[in-house]
Image (cartoon, rainbow, N blue to C red):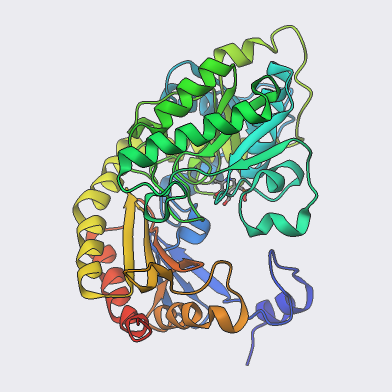
Length: 443
Ligand SMILES: Cc1ncc(COP(=O)(O)O)c(C=O)c1O
């Protein structure tokens, strides 16, 4: 017997990124903290934080109350008015952001943030090109999908003009034949500078990168890389944009991932963790220099729901709760004291694990068929039969009540920042069992 929710979904809801016919969505009835459950009361530990947005955990009482209270006062107001919650959210975000990043342009989500950040960069520099990395995701709207450096872009090509992709650092599969992190940093920076020069530095408006690459592998940049990009941008007059839609607000154990390296970009894109998606909200944090460029001339961009007050009220409550409850510190220590050591222990037990990497509550287990050759456990962008070995692992996790995030040949460990150490260990214990299936496929 299927429920009305399931039947109406299958009849009328057109889902993202999917061939519609084969879908069998789980009907979620409720959630709390790091757990959610279906209509039959079957519970899942959320190791995916939904789409890596549920940083504060499901149904945080202070955020729920703030939304309820705001709904009773004022549900929405046009962006040209000022409003107490919007003003407060902008101030709190600006206070947390590094350096002179102290103005906020609000959007409804991440794609609109990357669209607007690159629009600002083009207008301020008078240049056209934007450089982004392969193995990146920047959203699914016109420019943001073109800037995306993964297969989700392919079907939308040819896209927006002036986007050029380059290789970022990925020590485990170095594009530069590097054998140490220091070599990877040096060679990745030289490669980027070569691309800038060959594209014509005077045509490059922005370099945009995910501070820590999310969906495409939790690629943590080796020390020195971000500082090197900052230096390169300064030397060539290029705007440095850090896309922290996934990486900010506790995910990396910091307010902003750049804090980990003490680097200040010109623009930061955020969404997701700012209020955990309780109400859609994203934005661009803007340096004083770039904001001032629009002091006299109008900024030619806007959205009906820019700075939606329900979203902003949720952001204010969420940021304050994160401060009051030490949630950033908790996420950091989950990374250093629990997830990191537990995953390294898994790696010793399971020959199918090629590498584990991450920080905070942002980790990847990269699976291989052969540790020597590093052959991927399933091929790049595998689909259908080729993806079956990964699908088997995902199904085995779900059967044990663990909701994982899997991408290509990786399983990501990305629970809410508020997850208890015991729950994290429980989830990793399930992964420990499930990975025995993967080990059988190792050569
Ligand atoms: C790094 C990054 N940028 C942008 C986006 C797009 O955000 P949204 O789906 O809110 O448009 C995402 C979404 O996953 C992301 O991870």
